[in-house]
Length: 126
Image (cartoon, rainbow, N blue to C red; front, side, top):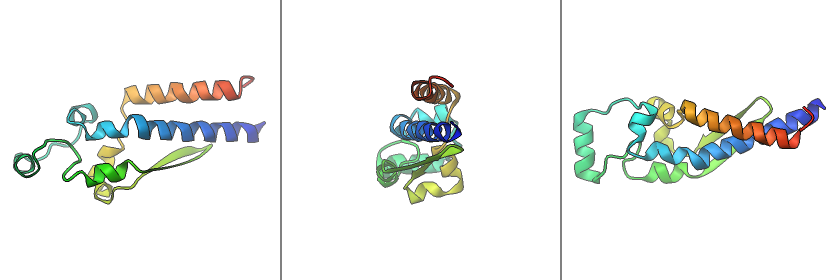
């Protein structure tokens, strides 16, 4: 029974990690992400230079390379947790890594309901 529970939980967590990657990671690159996820303010000079050179104000995006790389995913899960690897070296800097992996309360609620439903379907007796 314990082995079955661990297997179902790991599969549910993997699905939750994949769902976060598919549903929420892209939102971190939208202009509204600054407010939604509470990103640290960028300097006025940086924002002005970015607008002039790149023509946009999108957070975590300079050329778009990191955003494209982040779309590749690797999700690993055990019954103890889930890990989603984001392949974007420029986003691995301490401040940026924290920003790109921030999960807000509303997202946590949706992801929790997803895993609860998954477990309930697989282990109805538990």
